[in-house]
Image (cartoon, rainbow, N blue to C red):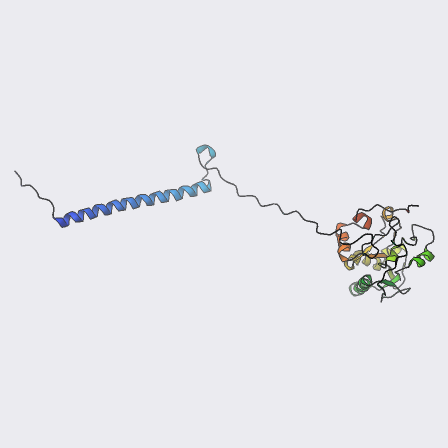
Length: 270
């Protein structure tokens, strides 16, 4: 019969308990680490799609959001910026249906325009400044010499000029010249002055292509007689200001009536 073993020494028992606790902690940490790696890996696989289909229980692949459509352009041009009826407005529309009011209107700010001319021209100050700048640009940019053939004409002067041909000359009180915003422009040489052939001269072509930059429009185009009521006048330039002239140029609209949605004015209303 063997001898009975007694309990292990106290130091050895404490050592064993510490080892046991350490092993348990290690096992717990290893388990947690394994769980975290699995979760991260699984999430990445789901995000990338992993080539799985909806049929095998995998998360469906999400497509990237499409780019937002470009913002629609907004027309910022203010059609109400100036009056179309007030004779003092640079936008006043004068045609066979829209006489000046009063018909004997005379601008208060007329000045002599310092440019080459046949007869000394007068225009409203703003239009005069623009004409001077335009004539200088024609000289600097294209070597062209322009001249004025006619500008402001009073009611009484228009009475003298009007010859009864309503396609060539406006009746008194219905003439744009009376606004002080118009100049009949020609070449200083006199080539094709006040004739349709002026539109084919270097001066006429330059004005047609560049007048808008200075706030002028060719008021009576060749293809708009049914709108304006006047035959083609490639020399007749009307000041409306740079914003409106540029807007009309960019839109490709050549008459004030069409731009502002006004009735065509081929004839006077008797």
